[in-house]
Length: 330
Ligand SMILES: Nc1nc2c(ncn2[C@@H]2O[C@H](COP(=O)(O)OP(=O)(O)OP(=O)(O)O)[C@@H](O)[C@H]2O)c(=O)[nH]1
Ligand SMILES: [Mg+2]
Image 1 (tube, helix red, strand yellow):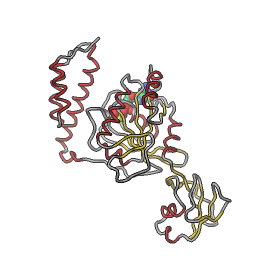
Image 2 (cartoon, rainbow, N blue to C red):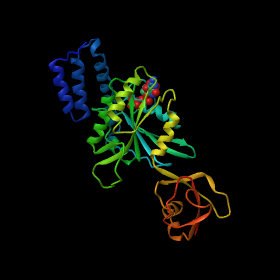
Image 3 (cartoon, rainbow, N blue to C red):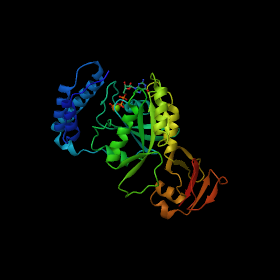
Image 4 (cartoon, rainbow, N blue to C red):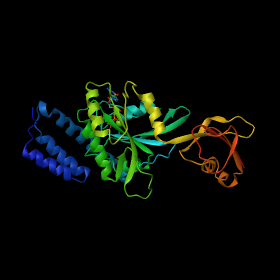
């Protein structure tokens, strides 16, 4: 059944797309709501309009109640081995993922636009922690102004896709496009970091969620076809747990960091809390993480781990590997 939208509706929609302020947008949406044919074929469109109207009313109310919040931005100091920002269309399961992998408790609900503010949580993996940030949804029409800086500041992103949704490809592409519009490009394999580049490329893992849903395997095939060449894809059911333990490992490993343990001379190593450094970190760079004076004062170091004899003396430029144990002498 076709929706059969009237020319008046299409005109109102064109105005909506041009609208700049939340008030203008709300005005257009109300006109569209009045003009949308109310029958079975347009139910999905009606639901979308309703949720956009509710979201905008909310936004306008918040701006009125907290006028200073207009220029709001969120900063999450990095903690643990690295920071992922979780982005996606409405209702894809971003908040559910946080509740499954961390102790954070963002609201989860069966309707879109549940999350309005970011929430951070720490995910445990073996003896390290990785920081995850849940965010509000992004659509072609709606994206919080502070989202781009949050995404740019993260070490990497998770782009979540809803395998229960027939429109999941378009919804995910809208997220990619909106962020690209503010010079934040989600990419599977970014080039080496160029801190001053105007366009920021953010390493991204695509997480296809709700594999338990009816028809999910068919949609996954299309997701792989469209996005497979651009992003690594990991399949889960956040609700039921499928693929979550593997996801923990993938999230840690994709950060491309190594764990290094320290030991005092004559004592056993401290295996409880490793330092995490970028792969390729040298001994002297790691020593500076332990104490800023160590970079200057370091006289020698012994190492237990990959490619050395136990307790071998190593130089300042020795590159460290995962699970190396170092004894720093100052
Ligand atoms: N069947 C199924 N449902 C899921 C899965 N993950 C999440 N859901 C459901 O999807 C709905 C949306 O989940 P949320 O975590 O609130 O989604 P969100 O992406 O945070 O939504 P917004 O905050 O609106 O952007 C909830 O009803 C969840 O219970 C899943 O793996 N399978
Ligand atoms: Mg949410």
